[in-house]
Image (cartoon, rainbow, N blue to C red; front, side):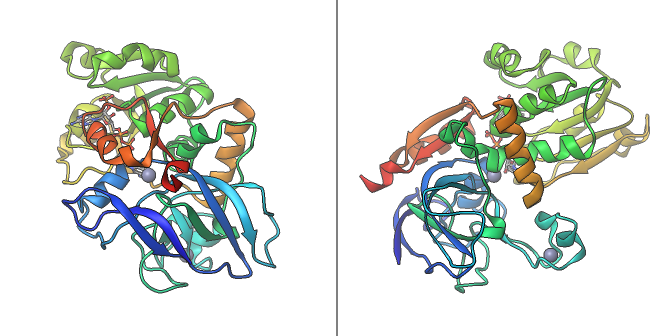
Length: 348
Ligand code: NAP
Ligand code: ZN
Ligand code: ZN
């Protein structure tokens, strides 16, 4: 079945219309008409081959919310007409020690990513959510409450879980001081979640124009990171700092904010390595860590938490024809705070 999509044919060409072949649903599959797909900075890194592993044509998109159109005969969780969602992974080995702990994102046999991944079912490469339809195994398909605005819920599938998971893993909560670096798609969800979990939240931004928004989104305090005095005032004081920056920046400046036995956790994935001075780590005994999205059960937990608390992303909904323009704006940190593609535009 040929499905309309947008693809990049090379690192230097814009995304353009493309037809992808989707498999017919297997007994455990769910067929989803994509309503909305968020635009993650990872889509941009991948499309432009910044991680040096892109296979073209590349159809990005891993923040998918849609409506179920058909299900295979063994599917239990979904029926036609339900809202369903797909995030960054669509399969894993399901048997390795990480998978059996619900950490499918760290599958020791490598998870199948929603796009740019070897497709174990159909052969070839997986194609993501910048398309009118997607077919996924129900075990990797999520439930989203219809109480939430569905366009604004789409970014929860990557930006949401990628910030929720480390905040939960490092047990962020009342009495703790938590920093979030970079107010983009991930960062604004990090601020919302850290606040909802009861921490004292400080946002670090390079954009003075985002101070008011940072506070509105939940930060108790906003620091413009170019201001050395403001940075110094927070030295050695954070239990946990979540770094959501997509480009080169000085990690040592953020390690300096972390207190004894605290952690700087990286979720941003800039193209080039970032230098770390060992002195930044050893006194006072700090940890530098990383975190990748979240497992399937934790993603569902995060979606349910969002439904209960009424948490969604702040989004700018765009037609797919504007996606290349949106990428240029992402590079200028000019997004408030996630672009989401209205997939109806693909049909027109
Ligand atoms: P985004 O919306 O473009 O936000 C990135 C933010 O970083 C910008 O809004 C900006 O915030 C800040 N920034 C940009 N350039 C900077 C620079 N040169 N120096 C300092 N700060 C800068 O991107 P996103 O979609 O949130 O993604 C962020 C990163 O996370 C990307 O690298 C993405 O690939 C990665 N990611 C990782 C995972 C994972 O599983 N670990 C999942 C999804 C995404 P201010 O204007 O506030 O400074
Ligand atoms: Zn993403
Ligand atoms: Zn596994």
